[in-house]
Each structure stands twice: as C-alpha cells, then as structure tokens.
Length: 224
Image (tube, rainbow, N blue to C red):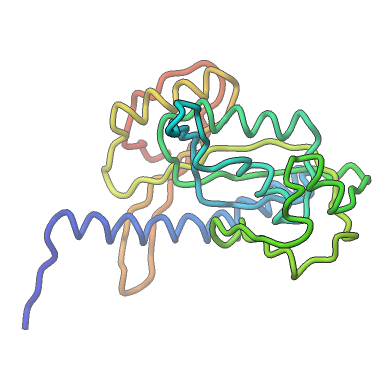
C-alpha cells in the first residue's frame, strides 16, 4: 500500500532528522576542532529563552528559573561570574527558541564544592533532595550526588545553534532575534542540511558563523 506524508508532516520529519544529523556532526567534528583551538571541552544542548509570566499578584515568574546555573551544575561545572551572566543575558535577548546552544569552556584549575556551588547560585534547597530535568544535559538528581563533590571552575562562551533543511528560510521573527544577539557580540552558528540520500545515510552540511555587526539576509546559504 502506498502512503504519502502531508507536507507539514514531511517538513517535521525532515526537521527532526536534520537536527539529529547536526547534533552528531557537532559532537564528532565541531567540538574536536574547538579542542584543537585550545578549548578544554564543549557541550551541545537544546535551546531555550527567557519566558517570564505574571502570577496572580502580577509579579514576573521565570518558567525556566536559574536554568543556566542548573545547566552548569548538572554538568559538574561552576562558571565564573562573567560566564554565567553572559549566558543569562543571551537567553534574555533571544525572542525565539533556537535549536541549541554550544557551550564551550576553558578550565581555570580551580574547583568549587557542590554544596557551596548550590548555595552561591541560590539553589540551596537541592542540598537535601530534589531534582531538575531539562533533557539529556540538564539532569540533576540530588540523592545521586555527594555534596562534597568538586565542580571544575570554568570560563567560556556560548554560541547559538540554528538548523534548517533544504531551502528552508529564516522567518522574520528569527532574523530579528538573531540580529539582536549578533549585534550584542554573540555568535550564531548556522547549519543548512540537504538530504542527499536517506537510504545511503548521506547528508550535505553547510555551516556559517555569523559574528559582529551584520544582517541575516542571504538564505539559504550558498555553497562555498
């Protein structure tokens, strides 16, 4: 029996495949290059942005409260103040959910005790239990940890990752959002993926780094 996907279902399927292809490409190729450039390591994680809502009193509540700090704790890292504030500012500047973040860092040779790190980030309630789970790289279950564990103190940067398939374009709201972060000094690493042959597991990947004052005008990317 023949069966055809509707165009919307087909686009969703392509998006999921291409996002996974890029995730593996980053893990296998991009991060290894970053290490050769002098970075200690990097992690690719799914993206988010600051989404405050008002409670019944009219006060603003963050749906992802302290998510950036939680990301570092979950990965046994303790960012210096500048690094954490840089990440927090990025998620507040964004007006859309990017496909992901590439968080890269350099070790300082210093360490912070987990218990102290939780207190410093205002997460003291997790010292005696509790957990959070925002996906593969954002999971922390208190009973699984010794509060005397050491967190590596790190400095680093965060890149925004956006993935498109075929001739997919950046919609206006994404262009405005990404132009905003680029003008503030953040890097957008854009990937365009063409499915050459799904049966043969062949994909064509083009990537471009957008940094410094610029406008996102030419999409899809032209082959270099």
